[in-house]
Length: 176
Image 1 (cartoon, rainbow, N blue to C red):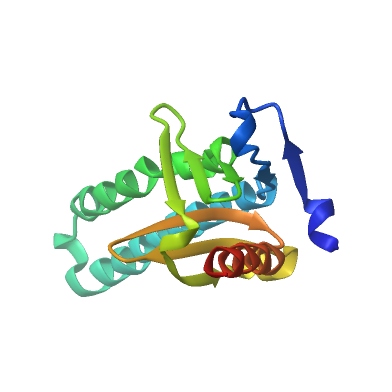
Image 2 (cartoon, rainbow, N blue to C red):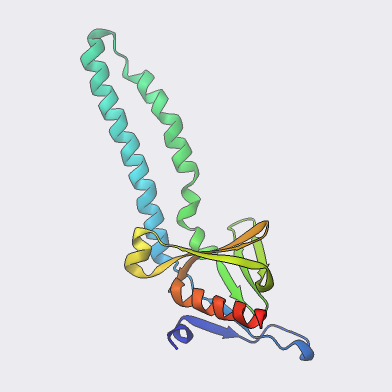
C-alpha cells in the first residue's frame, strides 16, 4: 500500500494494555508549503506596489502641480503593514503535526501558542480535500473533517487522497 511509505508508526506513546492503540503521524509538506506562502505574500506586496504606481501616474496626470505623492503613499502603507503582519504563515508549516489513532485524528499547530484540535471518527460526517496550485503539482493539500458543530483541518498533508482513503476506512470500521 502506497500510504505506508508516507506515514510513520509511533508506538512510543504510553497506553493502557487493554486499549493498545497504534498512533500514526501523517507526513505534511513543510518546505514547499513555505515557499508557496512566501510567493503568495510577495505577490500581494507586488500587487499593492503596482496599484501605487498606477494611482501615482493617474494623480500626476490628472492633478499635475497639485498632486502630492506622500498622501498616496500613506494610504498604501496601511495595507502593506496588514500583509506583512501575516508573514508568520511562511514558517507555520514547520510547526504542524497530524496524528491519527484508532479512534480519532488530532492536529497540533502553532508557533508560540500551540493549538491542539481533536475529532473522534464516530462524529465525522464529511471529508473535504483542498489543494492549491502548488499542492496539485507537488501532491499535497489540506483535509477538512466536518462533524456536527465542529471541524478539524489537517493542513498541508502529503498525498491527501491516500490519507482520505485511510480515514474513510477508519470511519467504515467505526460504523461496523
